[in-house]
Length: 396
Ligand SMILES: [Zn+2]
Image (cartoon, rainbow, N blue to C red):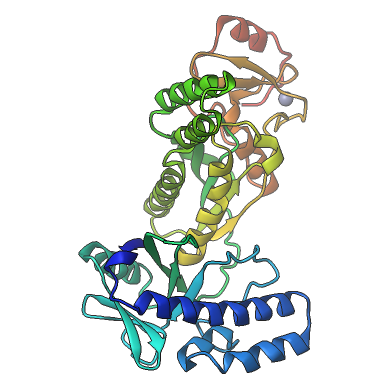
């Protein structure tokens, strides 16, 4: 949940105080982060000593025993963004925390009894309640992140409320009694999901939704125009930036919404079964130049967060889409207007290329192969001939 507040509308002096607090916090945080990362115990000690200068409620961020400890994933964390001030909002109703919610106000404590009060819109309060209900009776840890652009005159204060829930890492369920959900982002298309169940003797595919970002054509045409203008040296920088904007427009929001839909459907389909999900997300190298680019990569983080939130067993493994799942031959591709069909000239297997990794996943889980194709396919004539001509003994 991200909220924006105009800096100019904050009470006089409060923003300055926030900046000072952040300066002090950032210095300690940076020393702590890098010392941890480099295994320098004396640096960690020094950081903790320095932390004594911070208001007491912010020291929880450095307390490994605390639920709002901020450095738990220090080894794997990327470089922390330098303008992020993470204020722990541990227990929203407890005024001893760095930040807390009172009625419909977010109160951020600034030290020396000073506080910054930010009105919380109705939708934020509703969202918080909804989220807490989703994981009840588990307790939600809330973190408030406050940031601003370090310009001379930053316009907005960006306030994010981040929720976390503490739970045990889910164990791998028995694939024979779980709802299987394979999500493939390795596609020009967007995101493709396969929902299936298997009892060990038969693997039944329930649904194969494809999610595609809206208005791709229009946005791409707009971007192409901008790129062409830039190529002619016409306001180059601006046009390139606009081209990037229109291709990536709202893409991240779309990924979030798509991931939420995939999980929701999985819960519906699971109907009480445990869930087993795999997210097949391409490595950054292989999708260079693809229009979805970073957007698809962001699916990993989004899906990981959702899996942790709901306590779902999820893996992030890539399975081949160019190898026949039955005989390991290299698959060939024919393009139809709507689909890329992968087929095996040796054994006659064919299906939408986007579904091929799902077969390999079934194989890896020791499950029987589903019937192919997973959904009805319009085969081009030449492919029909080819497939009918393969030698007998072909599967399916
Ligand atoms: Zn084959």
